[in-house]
Image (cartoon, rainbow, N blue to C red; front, side):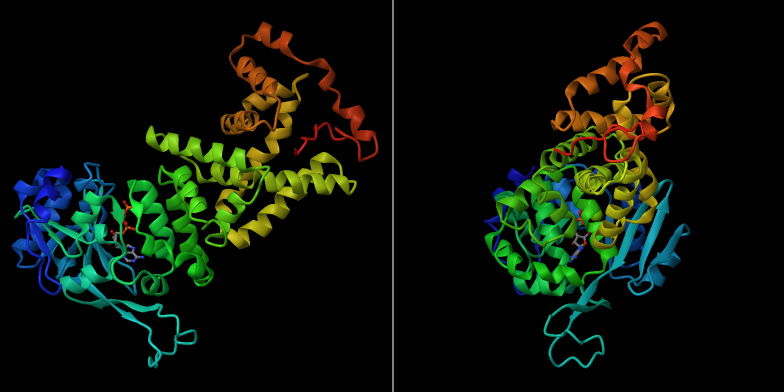
Length: 453
Ligand code: ATP
Ligand code: MG
């Protein structure tokens, strides 16, 4: 599709100031039925009421790449109240920056009014101006023209508008040509655009990995110097962006790219945790690869499970330190979990709602080494057994735990009663007597310490 399209790009004259190149159906082949009925209805209704309306951003880009869009966003010159009045099932969301959600059945279309941006300058008298050589965006809720709306977008490939009624693509910044060339290019001066909104540095890496595009060298260059600007971004927004990166289905590729470009330090606290643990690296990359695979297979993924993996080696080394200072393994593990969570949560803004599951997965790990008596049966019944077992398998695959342990549990789960009885490893089941022994030693609470090597 894209090839056919591009062959025509260069035949067209360069558009004048801010005007888009317009591609007709015969050049791109994207018909209105590539949209969901809800997206189509939203655009049609707006146009019938006399407004401009286009599908915009990621959906147009993905359609041109022959991929199925994740969702459809619509841009219009109608103001939020006007949009709201046209659709019975719609609501305005956001206080500062108002957009309208239009609902049809289970689908929601996000409709935003064309906007322009107001950027801080040295002369700006706005009181949010304390760090104001920064060029950071002050307001992005000012309505504007379609040309301005295209200008405020981040990448050329994200600034294409598709009108399903005329079946035309309006391309303001040569996004079509960049897609064809396989380049992810920032609109305008990259350093300035990163200063306006530092999160764009992360978006650059994520989109390059996800779309298989080469990040324009001009977009890479300023990142190292400007990465520290991310420190001023609210933790919750960084956390959202990090989730998008980790759950993009291309986490391994994103990390590889960051490392290749030497950008893996200081860009995102979570990435530092991921990339700066020599011991845990293999384990973490395995966890990310499995997450990518599950997304590819459209299986559900759990942030708590992934965070548990990302922080596991922190927990292991803290656990060992606490045991070295004389604490018994079981209480030492609980102290280690609390300690790691309280430090990392502040740094990484991991919401507390994930705590319970992470702790369960971690605290079940030593129990996999207890294979005598009733304990393996009790572990099997634990509601979180499956996640904890998957976690154990990754530990085996990364070489942290003897692969035999993983195989034992694999067999044990599916074995009949009699076989299970034969499998029990009797020596391991004597927790009560051991508990009386003095700390320091292994297994004093019936919990086998795991060697954090
Ligand atoms: P995805 O498939 O990941 O959703 P997307 O391109 O739709 O990709 P969104 O984050 O949903 O990305 O944003 C929608 C559109 O809004 C983008 O295509 C881009 O045009 C614009 N946009 C989003 N975030 C920014 C930003 N930080 N700076 C400039 N433009 C942005
Ligand atoms: Mg999107």
